[in-house]
Length: 87
Image: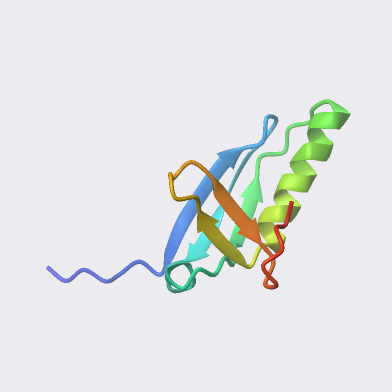
């Protein structure tokens, strides 16, 4: 059969209150670029501190333009186009 390469990779996570998800274009990922699209999340309410942290995490994911994984594979770093970390 014919297998077409996937145009997007999916990502998902949990912020402590809500689950979030979205797509990342595979061409961008291969070039070290981060361009989250079609993001969404569940809409549960939580304590104010948890909701503030959740907003910060979602903003970081949305604002990131570059990504890198540590040499030991344990840390994902998201950064702005300038290379400055988003959070």
